[in-house]
Amino acid sequence: MDKGKTTPLHLHPEATECVYVLEGEIRVHIDGVEHTVAAGGFTMTPPGVAHAFTVTSPTARILAIQVPGGGASFYIGASEPATPELEAEAPVDFGRVIASGAANGGFQVLGPPPFREA
Image 1 (cartoon, helix red, strand yellow):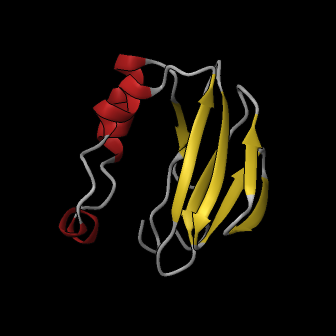
Image 2: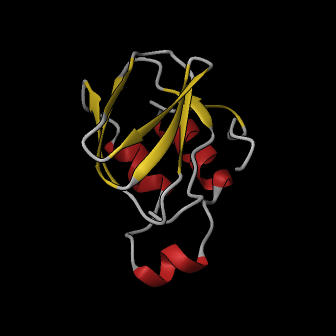
């Protein structure tokens, strides 16, 4: 992901979301508190807790896991396979993200990204 990539403020009603930062740095907003998480860092957001992230380094790679599993249909409906061209030219389609959450469950948008620079 490139710098500035962000998620809307959202929650997963029935899943814990775990994020491991493989490369780069992100800023996370979990239940109103913000933290910077660099490569090797880990976050865990319990079910029903509002959260979001934004990429603050030039690029970042993360591993995101939902427990219990079951979020695959949301992610497939909300995104396209990543390519360098797509990443550089296509901003996040928040309408598609909201529609996929409504259609597939597991993801509820609460509002825009909470970060001032987003």
